[in-house]
Image (tube, rainbow, N blue to C red; front, side, top):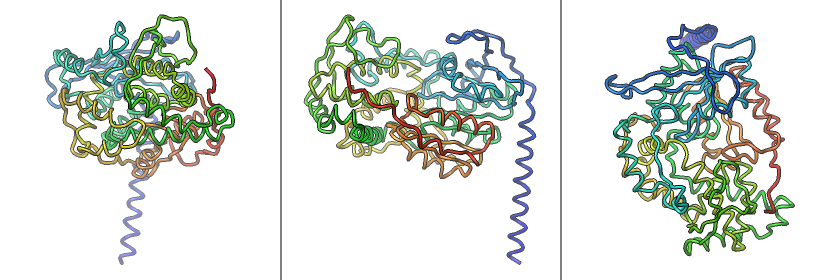
Length: 505
């Protein structure tokens, strides 16, 4: 009797799933009538005509009263004759990056997907063209300002005072923003989305999946930052793992090992010297102002003296590890510093502070992290994890001080619980990612039964610059086309290689 009951229940469940799948497939074939019509436009960075528009939402989505904000939208229309109704949505990192500003540079990477699907870019509230919460933390007239606090406290106070005149800083969290995105989806007439999130964008994508699972067709996560990764709690540990991995690869590489046979000892020596106190260095005043990959070669540009602290020096190394190209330069930069030449390290620090930390909507970054991350880090926990690491606990200490000056938003009580869902999810992580390591991908995949986790050899937070990386592009395209991780051939991943290490200035 019990066996019969189990069989009946199983059959009913299977029938329900089959009906649900059929309903989803049917909804995927149609689009609702859009209430928002986009207009042809030009976007800086591309010569083609695309479509642009804005959608108004209440800043306070709960009360639906008071201030309204406009969300900026850009669509790169599908290029092929056969257009699928579900767009591919790019959700950027940060938090604080602008999707629409990234669009011209991101769109070519997904040209194959675009043959059949629109590429949709929506600036999250508080970023880009969507009521941005921008802060000015550094001063080009004073280059030393780039070598101070991660978030200078007096500037944080000033920024809060300025922004509070035009925004409620407690209403710019990820859950609220993902309800915005779903409202934009409906306004544009899309039934379901194919989400692509990178870095913080993976957190946002997971939150969207949690809040609006019926409107998700696929999710691709690159460098997973789940809601229970309380940034920057484990930054020091994750950087240490990545740094040691890159140093090991250098030791196994004939040219790198020959150029830097004592690299591990030199790395320790560099840290030891910086612990003694700041190093005075002359840097090029306008070094890498355009955001290009930092160069190691000298130039006759105007120079200015700065003091390079341990905190900013090791942070520069951490950012170098974000991408394979930077990681391939790290041994040379560390070797030069061990020889007493801290200029390459200082100029990398300036570049990353100017083009990474100093860009984006830092007010939105604080609104997100001061609500979703810092409050949940137990006293002493971060200091314990950072002990005996290259990075140390400086980032946690300074970010905690900044958050003490910023209004704290509330998040749902279950916010940090693992996201569960049945949508197909492709997870991509770099072997030596210094901020969102493969363990994050494993932990996230455990609660997503239709997921596949691929670890990219030699990869970092990004994968650009590796040989054979077209394998990942093919996997992502095939995944979105088929709408399932089943049957994806990942054998090409084993052929991905680092192009080598820089061994000369």
